[in-house]
Length: 481
Image 1 (cartoon, rainbow, N blue to C red):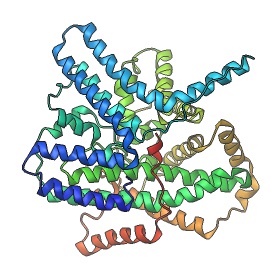
Image 2 (image 1 turned 135 degrees about the vertical axis):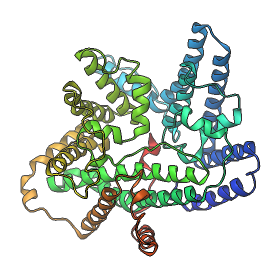
Image 3 (image 1 turned 120 degrees about the vertical axis):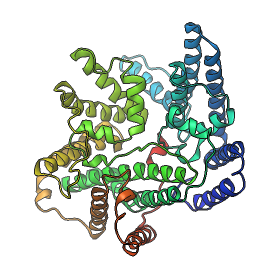
Image 4 (image 1 turned 90 degrees about the horizontal axis):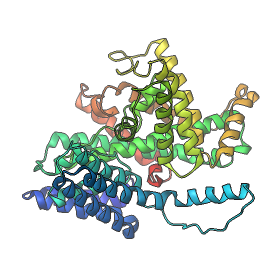
């Protein structure tokens, strides 16, 4: 079920009404309703894959109970590896089996030893990369004794399948979200209004910006050999805003929807395109995944505590694994490696934490130096996104070379009215983001001091844009990851 669909527009008010007016007297009934609604939400796409979520839930709950009873370190490790094997086993089978098989066949063919093997050609379950990592965080934290294992199965099942963030995050930590299922929720009007405001902004990002950008990014990328360098650059910029508004739009809707039910989810995007270097970008982009890899992979590997070789090794591991998490294609691996190359000079010169604060905090405009840093970081990001979007390495390489070698077209740069319209939307969008960058999301604090008629005029204008200028309905990009 898509957030930007009629189905969800009917589903959400029904679940909201049942939650607050029918099951509000019982915490267990509220959690059971969340489980039922979440299974319906996920099963709307393909009910067969509910078995994976249910099995993963049963395994990790049992692992948690087992860890609470075991003191022997060997037995505790065995339980932890049971959880890791089951979760990553499902992920590897459904997402990476065909990739490894195809590369295995290619490698033997290059050695003059062709082999025959059949691929599975199975459908990738929506959201499997997200909920497997979420349940893994529970098992790992219980193993590390950072979290008490739960004895409430329904609370744990609701944590695993919570429908707002089930299929595309944020990837919540058990230490943050699970305890919220233990406490009785009371309806908070101000929290619900804030949630609706964030949902509105998320829908604007997705429907007006991302879906419109997708139309033209797809045309340009799918027919890149027919376009000049300037048009290719425009296509890359369109995709840059498509993926940001698509994914952060989903996160905004997920976080806003959670607030309607009295839950707090972590911030997943923090205005990443205003970053002044790549290190800052990765602190602001897909925060739930970046911090997951930091805590469960980078730090256990030694982080940046060792010598130069260890720092280089760990940096490349974390970025390449992050790229591979996104998809079973060499383009994602190169995308991750390229970001590691961007990041490494900052790490080695100990400048990777220069920009912790908000850019131009308390000021309307950035300094010239800040602006140039933002533009440089944005430009590097645009180039990297070409690998993320391209069909293969050859396509990405050719695309980038052509983008920078057709100099004549830059001199005679011109775009059609449709392109200009999207660029106008992007300009308005980035202006709103800039002036709202000190909040959790753009509309969080923007307009809070305005008179009510002016503030509501802005909200109605956003709603009008959604209904009048929304692009063709498209699935969220991160559903495929």
